[in-house]
Image (cartoon, rainbow, N blue to C red):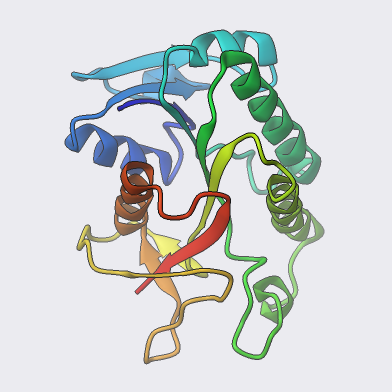
Length: 214
């Protein structure tokens, strides 16, 4: 498969990239700082801005699917509106390029806890910029639900996500936060990426939000 990856650097992006390449997929990785990526077989590295919709569409042409692991700095006071604007530009670019398949890396904040609350409401008090970022991603998911001409999937992590091991052993859920028998909610970057490329290959959650956890 020929994949266009938006956000090949950062935290999750490099793990997604490695997982895709390890399975024999070809990847074009869009990065603001291409020098952070190491050239390797089946990888094309491009510099670009997701807000340049026309150029983004040109770069997307000829690919089979898009993976979006894009985000602004969490402490950026404009992270909320930037998230929405970037997502809108990406969707427009996909339509211009004639692509329909996209998997978005979402967040855990809008998932539900066992008592029916949103995860974000069950967390300790958050800075306004962090709450803005969480709700912006939730608003983007709600917008995706109105879209019928794209085969989108919205993959959310557990409440905790960090570097770890690639075990290939995890659970999938839908709208409810996954918690283990110790009451912990966690997934490694590596296994999150395994689940994402599984979805790309198997398409089990078309036009759905789903989550990954141990």
